[in-house]
Amino acid sequence: MLTELAFVAFSALISIGWILLIAISEKNRKMVNPLPRADGACELEERVSVVVPVRNGERTIGSALESFTSQKGVKCEVVVVDDRSSDRTGSVAARYIKRGAVYILAREKPEGWMGKSWACHEGYLNSRGEWLVFTDADSELLDESLLRDALCFARSEGMSAISLMPRLRTDSMASKVMLPSLYALLYVLAPPFKTTDPSSDLAFFFGAFIAVRRSVYEETGGHEVIRDKLLDDKSLGELIKSSGHRVALLDASDRFSAKFAGSFRAHVNGLLRLFTQFTVESVDKMGMKGGLLSMTKYLVGATLAMLPPVVLPILTMALDLPLYVKLLSLAPMLTAIAGHYRTSSSIGIKGIYSLMTPLAHLTIFSALIYVAAQSMRGKLVVKWHGRKYVYDLRRGREKRLLTR
Image (spheres, rainbow, N blue to C red):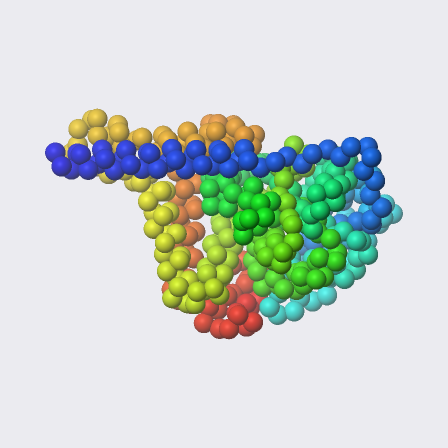
């Protein structure tokens, strides 16, 4: 009898926890303001430099450049920085030179730099704009006035930097399965609306679109300061906001799209980047012991939130328990699936894919376990865009990042 009551109580507790998480996620999602359209009186005299770092992006760079070179109402130069691509990226980008694009072959990346941050820095050095817009080679602006509207908003509100949330494309099965869970994590752990709130220390930028005044970029040190950060977009937002500047993150998902990751492996690598940067930052702030303790807290939280919906039904089926206990053990999983069904609908994914929520949770949990295990050994390894980055937690901050 006690065993039955324990299973029922635990199932109810986890279900209530998921209901609260879903409610928080929905509330935070609705608090992100959309990018307003500028009125006809807004005229931009400042030159804008759009910096597009790319590495082996022949499949997407054409669409990205087509959309940026078609923007209206702005004096725009597009600087393509080729980070040593081995495919046809250069020849595709060259087609847009006659439309004002500038093609730059990045110099060899120095030790201690992440590849994208180095490419963005190279783009800055070869640009002339009073505004710098950093984007990705798979971003695509679907509105010819988006750039103008974003900068008009930043100017009218006195913002030093602004980032826009895109609609993440869901072309692959992996994206359909993983993105609802990743969005839910974002809205709970790093609510985007807090980026715009000056009273909050949180600053979360999307690398698909970051516009920053050149004077502010130079004052704060830009990508040179965050050169060893895996999540350059988040780090750049934190750098600018912590320096006392006003920043904003707005929803423009109906007006431009981007790609988070394609294959299942790419999604896993994205998770490894996220958890690795969190671990490195924790070690920088609290030392080795404090950083590992912080990782342990997140691991415990993930264990309580993500494992029970999967494990409870399996346990009750394996044990000789009454039918009502077995049925109630499904409640946490059904609650989690229902929450991700709402998220799926909001980002244009068919609800049927929410049935694969347990797979997404196991993937996230496994990535967290992997990074935690690496942390105990003192070295974190991440592969990204053909490079291997090694963080040695036992070294000083300036010598921590190695590239192989």
